Image 1 (cartoon, helix red, strand yellow):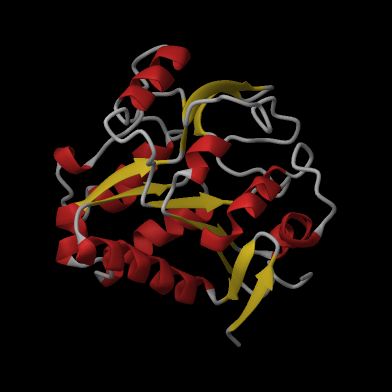
Image 2 (cartoon, rainbow, N blue to C red):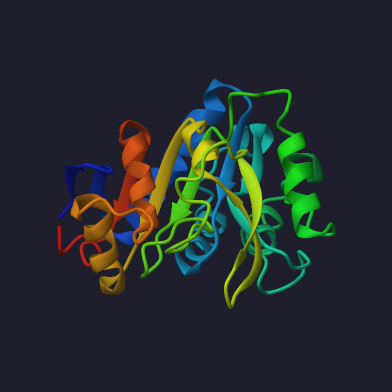
Length: 239
């Protein structure tokens, strides 16, 4: 049964996976109906399932395909053809099947060294100094990470950061990621959360003691007015 909960980290909409996908597509289409828009997708199994669903159902309108410029909120420093590339998965699963032109795709410049790639990506936004994505789609890790902000990540709470940076995740290599400053400049944030394995993480983010270095998703509490969690019943079971 669908329900909604107001939490310190934003509204949690409890939906089936496909109902969540319908809601995400609705929001993308609504943005495009108002004019050109930027949407950042995410990595992980649930976004991949959304790509397959959206491609199969035709859920995105012609306006969305014509007006949205597509990004990813964080990326591994690997070629787009790699199976580890977040944008590569978005391209193969969604953008290619729907015929989205190159002009509407803005991947991170992973051909550059990490710091240079982040600087170049940030520079592309300089004409819009107080704005990031119109819609940022995130996932939530079992450890409560979002984007490439992981537990004990030195970026969390660090002052004066740009919107987009490079960071080395211990044991997982270099990543390119949106920061808290970037998230604060997004028009809205939607987090897809599915499965029992995410229940403890969602609880810690939405209702746990405030320890963002331990539970990075808690940084979204500062943006609760524009954050929506699309969670299935299993993921929301502990709330």
